[in-house]
Length: 198
Figure 1: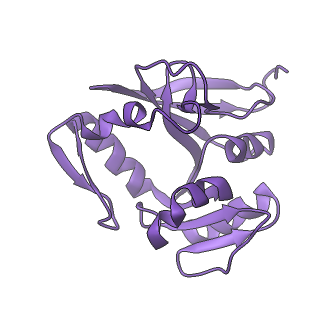
Figure 2 (figure 1 turned 120 degrees about the horizontal axis):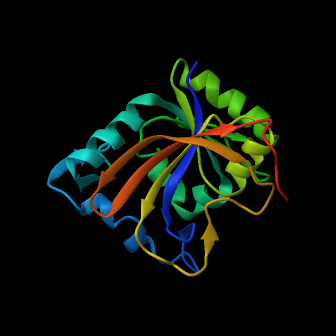
Figure 3 (figure 1 turned 45 degrees about the horizontal axis):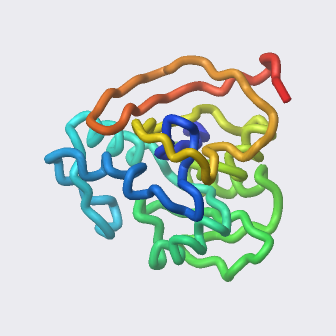
C-alpha cells in the first residue's frame, strides 16, 4: 500500500495562492524554468523543467495512484476538463456531489471515507491530497504519511495558506531536499503522537 501525502507549491510565507487566488504565475514559475520538456500523463500540458525538478515531478507522478481534492479546487479548475492532468482517479470530497464517472468519484462523507475510496483506486501506489482543508482534516485524522513542499522564493503576504488553521504537528526530516532553479523540493514525514500545539 502506498503512502498518503499532501503537497503544493508554496511561498516562503506559507501561501498556496495570494489574495483573491492571485500569484499563481509566481508560484508555478518553476514549471517553465528549465529545458526538459515534460508532458503530463493525459497530454493536457507540457512544462519545461530543470533536470532536478523533472526527476522529482516524474517520480511523484509515478508513485501516485489516486487523488483526493475538495469541491472548491474541482470547480476552480472546471474539473480539469474531464480528467486530472496526472491521469489518475480523483475523489472529490463535497457536500454537493455530482454523478460519478470513470475519472471522478464524489463523496459526501468523511475524509476517512474519501481516502479509503482513493486507496482502492490507487492499488499499491500512493494517494495525494490537496492542501488546505482536505490536508488539515486528513492530518487531524492521522491519515497523512508525508508532506511535500515545492518551496518557491516569493513572499505573497496573504491569501490561501498551505494548511487551514488548526492544530500544529511536528514533522520529521526533511526526508529529502532537491534544490532546483526557482524552487526547492522538500519532503517531510508527519510525526503522530508528538506534542501538539494549539
